[in-house]
Image (cartoon, rainbow, N blue to C red; front, side, top):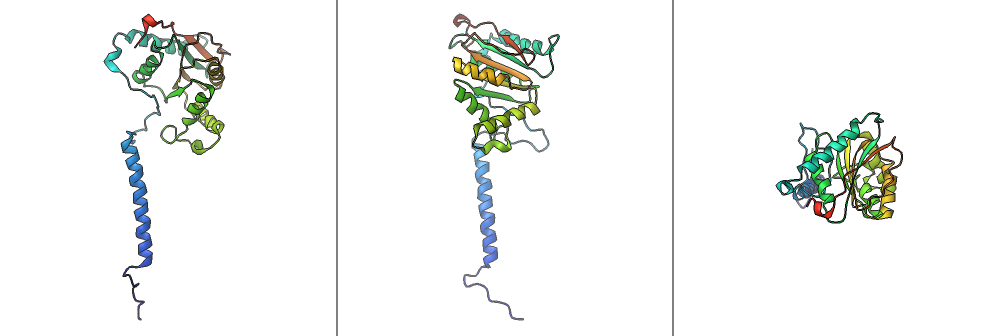
Length: 235
């Protein structure tokens, strides 16, 4: 039986389309790999559990934090003591307020704690909290691809992504959350509302404000770290 002659250009159109499809798939995968490698995003080993999500914005300063081990230990002991306190109600969060004047190292203390005590936390998360809007946007961003990677990450409504992030925290109790630079009354009131919704975990709250009302002690075990004065700054 006679066969149809090959196309004039010498290639089978179906094979040509398949080659084009494979080529475009390869380019997409190569672009994704390049994105990951150029941003120092960890690639999980197939035989190891994935790393706990974290977005702590700064690295440890290591030995430059010399002489501050005592204050870090005190912070750690305060959080653990609240967990083990007599009459502790299961399911409540532990909030540690770190307050002091500007520039004394409140954020640095919280970052060093997060970097030096990663074990046992299901996630180590950081919220920028200079305003109510900043708190909401930071909380919503936790749902993103390279952090919690939640199905709701592309939702336009901020409230939907916030609810998804809080559901993740509820499903993974034992997280560490840093709520940083809550320095206005509006941000304080908004943060207090958020605290009332949080499932069990450790919260480090940095603020210049010393007047806080943490609400129901059955839900929140709030502790105040000794006030850090400028002469006692930890930077």
